[in-house]
Amino acid sequence: MRAKIAEMLRNQSRIWGIPFFHAGGETPAEQYLEIYRDMLDGHGRALVGRLFQEGNDKHCEFVFRYDPNYHKEPISAFPDLGKEYRSEQLWPFFSARIPPIDREDVREAITALNINTDQPIEILGKVARLSVTSPYEFQLNGVDDQA
Image (cartoon, helix red, strand yellow):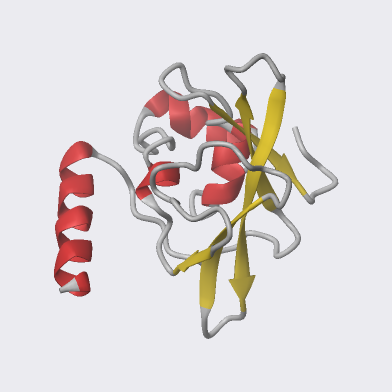
């Protein structure tokens, strides 16, 4: 049943033009994405959690984990604040924020920033940091040469 649901989501994502990224690629192991949210209760900006990759050449996974100090409303795709989420494929919550790589302006930005197209964490942190349709902001960390 899970496999059938996953395949349906993959098919729908292809129709919508949302790319599917698999863990691995050339993303440096020490690189991670911090997810922030402006709090509507007037308490500023909060660190929600972190996205990173973990594993080796044979098996690699994306990992999302809430920050232990975050106790507000969870992201709907990750309802349990205490759970560590793991997947070989990048979740639609993140992949939907990556603009279509076949668009000329996106290709130019990726080339100018010296990013490989198989590095979704870096694309999210450098190209898709902000979105007018989402209260979340992404910040790339763990590398010395951030642009």
